[in-house]
Length: 406
Image (tube, rainbow, N blue to C red; front, side, top):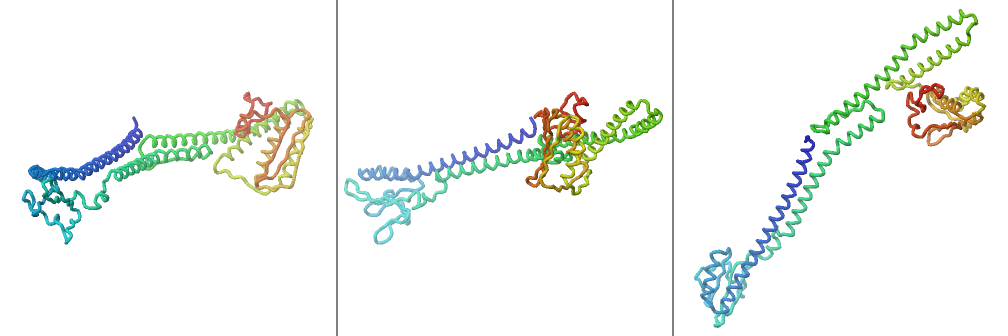
């Protein structure tokens, strides 16, 4: 079991322990309250027993009860006869004696007048187990203390679980954000250290950084390799073109069709090398494009004129729908290649005798260019891949089905 497991275990264990303590404290307060109620009721029962013995004129029983209760009770009970003498001869505290001309008992004193069956009168005095209002002010009454204990337990468990969830989800959110940035093409994304953590999540972050570094190295290596290969191919291509020119000069008009075929192949190879170099330049982080204002209508009209010859060979028509002139800022050559690539593919794949439509419109601050044909179309599941380098919808990658995916 890993470190993260023990962290989760410890946090949950601590939460349960704290909740158990809260419940234990609540039970403790309940028991204290129960004992308090018993202590309140006990003096009443003692007074009732002594009162019953006096009413029956059983003075010996009264003295026995007074002596027994005097040893065990915190609040002794005193019984005075008609002469004001205590039955056991004990001195009566001044705080229990009546005050004032009306002989009213002092606050917190229980005073009860009793009449025995033989006609003699007695006065029972004792201190109340609580003073007036003390019961209401008792802090640890059960309903109040139970509510406090439950609130404390809920508060503690909420805080513990909140910090546990935060502790676990915060690095996960960082990992998610880094993954999204990496998927968006920011190959230099790294997570780095996650504070002072030393658990499986830290290991995952370190593995993510290693993976991202490896991916960046592979992509950069691939881009650099394509650039180096393209540059290296230029030298032999130049020599082949020179050799072809010499061969034409020496042939003196013979085998022209073969030489023309070789020249077309060399031109295709040169175009491919130029496209790879352009792609490599655009994919590097330091690559910049030279943007300048240009007339989109003028650019589109020149493209249609260039592709018109190919359209005539297929007996198809290119229909151009231009609204208002549009000025855009961009690289004229790259924009021309992008539109020309799609337009030539549309002419190539459309059915004989059909129409290829090209139009554009302005909406939401953007210019939307639309090219449609009557060809077989592109499978829906490949629509997201056609703008990736070297991707072609034909898996056999035959030359007669299109270009090189550039």
